[in-house]
Amino acid sequence: MTSTHIAAIPTGFEGDVLTPDGPGYDDARTVFNAMVDRRPAVIAQCRSDADVQRAVRMARAHGTEIAVRCGGHDVAGNALSDGGLVIDLRRMDDVEVDQEAMTVRVGGGATTSALDRATQPYGLMTPGSRASTTGVGGFTLGGGSGWLERKYGLACDNLLEAELVTAAGEKVKAGEDRNPDLFWALHGGGGNFGVVTSFTFRLHELPEVTLALLLWPAEAGEEIALAYRDLMETAPDELGGTALYLTPPREEFVPEEMLGRQAFATLLAYAGTGPDADAAIAPMLGLGHTGGVVLDRPYADMQGMLDEPAGLRNHWSAEHLHDCPDAAVAAYSARAAGMIVPSPSLHTLIPGGGALADPGARYPVPWRNAAWTVHPIALWEDAADDERAIAWVRAVRADMKPYSTGDVYLNFIGDEGRGRVEAGFGAENHRRLAEVKARYDPGNLFHLNQNIRPA
Image (cartoon, rainbow, N blue to C red):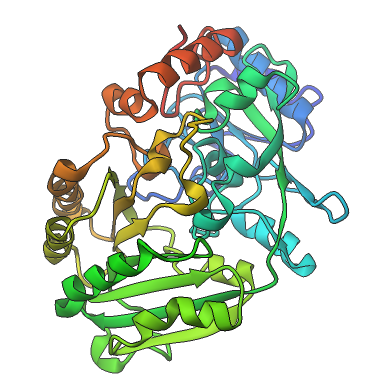
């Protein structure tokens, strides 16, 4: 991209245009994964749909690579392009609640936290990410897996309408009755079809959530994980959460002797409060936890409970399991020994079922029918630990292969190759997605993502 191209952007542009020699550039190119260090030629901080249209048209006219940034949480760093144009949506972050219609309209650059904080005063929610700093856009377009998905489904299940700018620079709306093929593709197909500038979601009443974060020594992990598995396989849909190995942070509910050491934990999240919630979490409370806390919290407060700090090096992946026999639990627990400790790394075991499962396979997210998901998340500071951390994540995947469905939630992985993307959708879904891609982005302008090539 040349200075002539850059000069063409500000004509009528409402936002800011940042270049490598200007103020604010380095902050604007920082993403969640500290392993990613890319230098775009220009960052277009859009304030309106018209800004996005101008940026897309300019990039297309000059053959410039485009990256689209919402939250910047993608572990592969697809929110940035070396030498290309970043369409930065973070200033398009308005959230408008319609209490009467029970809907919320969300700007394409809003974070999960912004969405949750806007709906919380009304005692309302729509399913969001497990990390409050995640962008609503990438999260939803990948499907959207969250703490209470067993009760409320995925984020995309609650999507009523989307507005986007296509590769041709045109504004398009997609919903059940408008461009239904595109609407279907936006449920898991990622950012392949355009720049989504706003989402409209269905809302649900949920004033408070019952939370139980319980801790045990790491050596008790396998035994407690088996009990957690048994509990969740018959639990009511209202109960969600995860089991995980972690290094506990310094909190009042963490005993001093557990600090700086690996522990095993269960996070139980019940959609509601009262006797039913108490009964649902009671079995885990009877297993002699060493530390922990049980409380009622607004949904928005729960969402940030396991937020990972920014500025660390990251590598994640996942395997979805058709079942979780004792041998799988043993392998999952044994591999925890390879984690970097102390660090914010997490080794999670996430239950499926309930509203998450979709026997009709309505949308291209077949991983939702998995009984369990193992999701290793390595986070570390020192580049000298890169090889060790990445090897650990890969080893977890290898351990889980005998139990894997072969599907994959693409928000849980980085760049693992084309075969992984295609297998994740399934052959028929991938074929149909490629046809939709060919209609809305025939030149594959939007390819910095879990890419679907045009048919």
